[in-house]
Length: 217
Image (tube, rainbow, N blue to C red; front, side):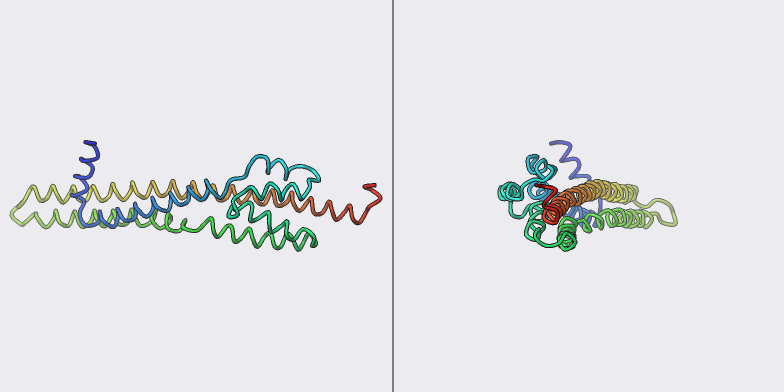
């Protein structure tokens, strides 16, 4: 508790740049929490469903049953349903529709990442601006006859250091969050593409069996 009070006390000497920096920090936290909720709630694939899709010649009715147990807004469920609804059409048609849905999902998953990227860039610049204003304040207190207000000079230097440190801390934290969620998005889309290929293979298998009934007899 004492450390928190000391940190808050130090922020008071950071000057005007502390407020926009704190606003960026809050924005980054909100986006990060929202992203964590989305990936926890809507980008999860049960092991049972994954094993079913990996099964050779699985039954579409089994897939529909397992999908019914998922949240309707689950991104994997959305992607699979597009393929299921078009499975009676040629494979190239299904692949095209699945690609369109994957693009929409990618746009949804990337929503808000630009904010984190902006925080990564803007926070150090605001910190640098706070540094410049703090040093300017210090220099103004040094007159032609020497040091006019030693305490004021110390305060200006403190303002410069606090703004710089805060800006760098916020930027580094937002950078880690941005990289983490970018990686999770890439992993989810790669897994979606891989499983989509499995579903298309099953569609092609059904087409082959219909065209060559003697081979399956």
